[in-house]
Length: 77
Image 1 (cartoon, rainbow, N blue to C red):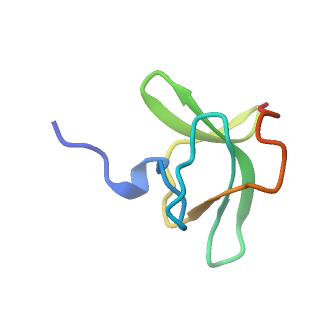
Image 2: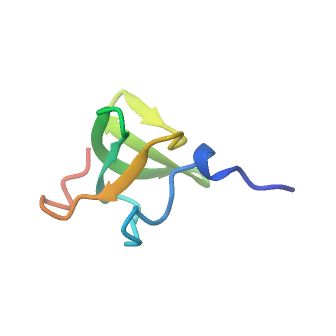
């Protein structure tokens, strides 16, 4: 069975190579100025990016992700 392509999943490392664990806050952004702040969560065996309680993003697409180290890391939604 083949795995998903990189753009179809939430990565385990940010663009700086730092590990992003489940429950940690991160920022997803694009070159075009689109930005989402949220948490990396896991449902079943899949990682999701959750910018708010009603929205889940299952793949990074053409966006980048960076770990947010400047805020409270355990303030999960």
